[in-house]
Length: 262
Image 1 (cartoon, helix red, strand yellow):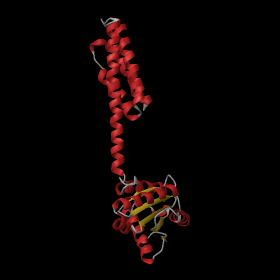
Image 2 (cartoon, rainbow, N blue to C red):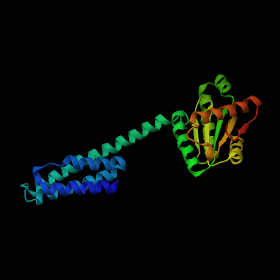
Image 3 (cartoon, one colour):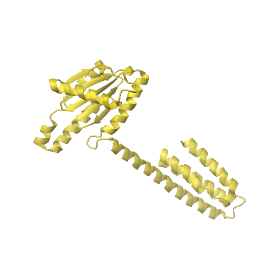
Image 4 (cartoon, rainbow, N blue to C red):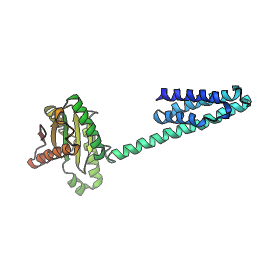
């Protein structure tokens, strides 16, 4: 992106020299500067703004068709630099706001885990990655035990602390590449990419057995790479994991697994 914007600015600068003061190409300078600042960083935008301001100052003083004095041309260059720099800073600030809004729309505000909307998108991406690499993928559906009792006895603030503690414990025990999502008040999804049934079960048993982790029931379902066809919907995968989790609750087991998915 930096290369493209730099080449664009050089092209605009060349046009500016050829056309002279009769044609104002300031808007074109602004397009490339703000694009670089939006895509990369405000510092990049400010540097490009400074270079553009210096070029336009030189152009105003040295172009044969210009009648500006050196002082006037320099003043114009400084003004353009300030204008372009402000545009760059504004573009970078806009990007930061958009990134934050996108993050807020995709995460659970209490825990910072992904929400169901984001989970569906991430799970779809993980599904195609596993299929392309012919790797297994395991979905763990977790149900936090005793949340209602904690809410009733200690209030929702204590229940919120329990939920946050649970997600923090999952993060400590899982890989950074694993997907953690909150899909209900006391229900969570963990997606373990590249792990088959035995490896995924071993990981989840270790994580759920951590002494500081609130108790939870878990249902694990593993999908082989060949099973992840276009006909298998993400919601069907989640439904299957949900069914296995409820089987764990019904039988009083900590964890129940199912493979292959049917």
